[in-house]
Image 1 (tube, each protein chain N blue to C red):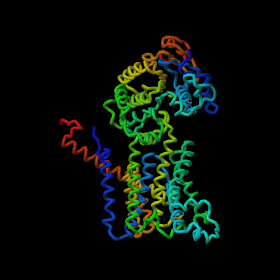
Image 2: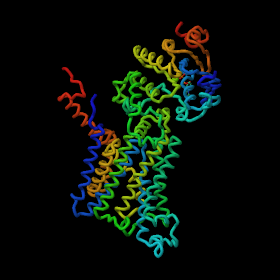
Image 3: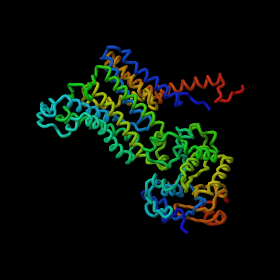
Image 4: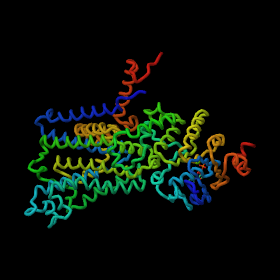
Length: 367
Length: 247
Ligand SMILES: Nc1ncnc2c1ncn2[C@@H]1O[C@H](COP(=O)(O)OP(=O)(O)O)[C@@H](O)[C@H]1O
Ligand SMILES: [Mg+2]
């Protein structure tokens, strides 16, 4: 029996450790360039998003073209919290953009965000709850595959429009620009400092560890089983809709964490978070990296977004064509993404080396 | 004495087509009942009705005295019915071992399963079952790479992991070699000591080697019922079904 080292759980964890040690070195490498550090931290956010999508799509088989919903809701929740942190609950209750819209009392929906703890909790709970309800409705109705993908896309467009339309609550297309960095107790999380980098780093680390553990649990096994054959899974007694809803909502929760980090880093949110193009590019990151692998999903995000910031400027609108070309190339020739390529290469080397060294797991062939 | 499973006057229409017509059946504990009949007789549909994959147009299905008509698939399964599909349904992208692990569905609560990382408490059972269906040496293999016969056995093994007292097997020996059929006969004869089975099959040779009782279906209705000797003597059955062998 040949065992590909790619599938060895211990090696996988080792690779994750190396990956995070490398990420942890970034502030030292970057040094004083706080703008670069801020940009790299945003990549961390993309990494969290990619992770959430690999979990839902690559692992659970639920193609979600609307991951921007949870991301956007999370980022708005955080931005609202930060906005109110810069105001005074007694004297200066109303954000400037609302005054411009002739709003005289703070809308009730904003009230809980005076308290940072409550605000951030809402930023995470609301998107998760949305996913639970929306996912529950869809999965109990046995909506799956491309139909589910289209529903998420429709939902995403609806959110986009709603957030533009509710001008007095969201400042429409202009979005919310909190003037101050996030305050946590007495500390300021300056987006242009290593503090915010470490916040994103810890968020990415925790999400990765929890996601990886979930994939290795019995729950994860059942999620994989329902991706393979939902009917069989149902006939073994599992409530497939429940499992789908939970993995979808958990993925939404992770995307909401990414949203919070994003608002913290950029001090700016806009309906652009609900942009259809952005949610689809998440799918592209994960497809190119390898959707079955959490790590490669993240690497896909780094590569595509990195290429976009450096090459996108040179190629301008041709960039989308180039990206589309790579996407088609991967879908056609590398259905497992770059991760699939690595798996094949490792498999090739391991079977070669066990052939020459005569490893004890494989009986020696007598020629 | 009432049987473990009772089907009472089942009917099923697909639009205007009557697929099952007033079909009744009683299955007793620890017996093996073969459901035979020509292609299109409605055998698979009957299993669909029992397992909740389809709801009957009318009629009742009673399991151990409980009415299960129209319940959801997973609910019926939890009441103790396991099913092997006509087109074998296994998790092709998972290993044989993982297939058996998923089938161990004692705990279905997703939250509890998130915190479950070890197969220790069912490892012995898994090894025993893998041994029983002859797949011990194939545990790490991807299930999609198994041979046709092995896939059928894996699915039977999964039903055993699931631990349902009533097993419904839809054409378990379809596409098997003679040797594999014999091995399956041994497995089933072993199983019927501890389980109640309904086996759908139209190969009479196979039926003869396993059945306690035989039920013949034709055009969605009960045609005959009895021991294999009685069925083989039955003139009506010979006409619609076995007739082809003589002519
Ligand atoms: N979903 C369906 N819609 C319409 N007709 C169906 C459906 N399922 C089965 N049938 C019809 O019901 C009849 C019985 O089918 P089936 O139960 O599969 O037979 P068997 O398993 O005995 O060969 C066939 O004529 C088939 O065409
Ligand atoms: Mg059939």
